Image 1 (cartoon, rainbow, N blue to C red):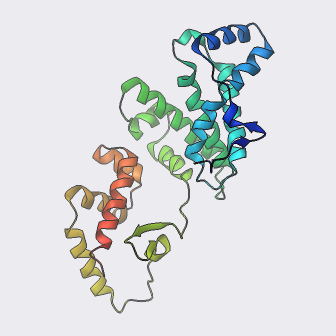
Image 2: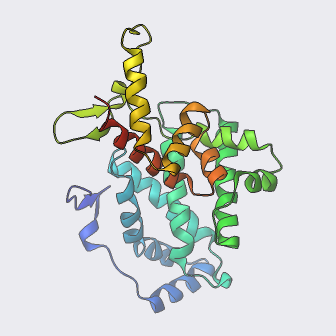
Image 3: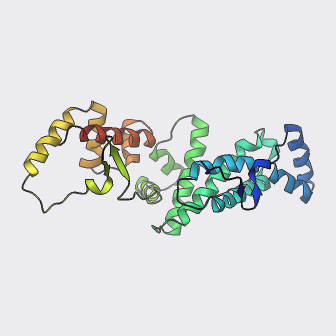
Length: 258
């Protein structure tokens, strides 16, 4: 994942210390008393946690050193704000903080610029979503998130869609073992209408090969123009499931369209 890299930001990751539970408790007690040395030891003792998290962001095209530094900022914020009286392990509290810090960095450095107010709305919505998920043990609906934020549903949807990562035109969407099919291959040429009736016939036949749920998702997404979050809310599944089923349906259709 990290290309077998041992040293990141001058830190030898192969020699990072591992703190035992008793050591963590003792160090945190000293941190609460203002012991800066204990704070530094606690940071170093949790760098492996940062290292494990940044691996999931290694394919974003960013320097891994930069991601590691941002993850360390999230770790430090977690240490400074952790409440030992909450009865949860430090790692349970720190992981979302570190991930959130990295995601903010990636979004703020995205080539597609999104206004600060829109990003703030989206971040707040994600926090509310996480809070409701922990409280109810289920994926909250957009209406529930919007109600908690006292905002219109449309405003929340727009903000969340705005921070989605852009898709490259050269991203492969299907590979049959020969030539890959890229996003740009799916961009229609409205000037070429000579064979449109044949394409429509092929499309109709391909649609018949899908199951009812796949047909419904494609209809909502591409014929009714709904976002993945709106589709997820309407049929009662997560956005990730909608995305997976949508890609699967499109790939299945491609097998029957010449």
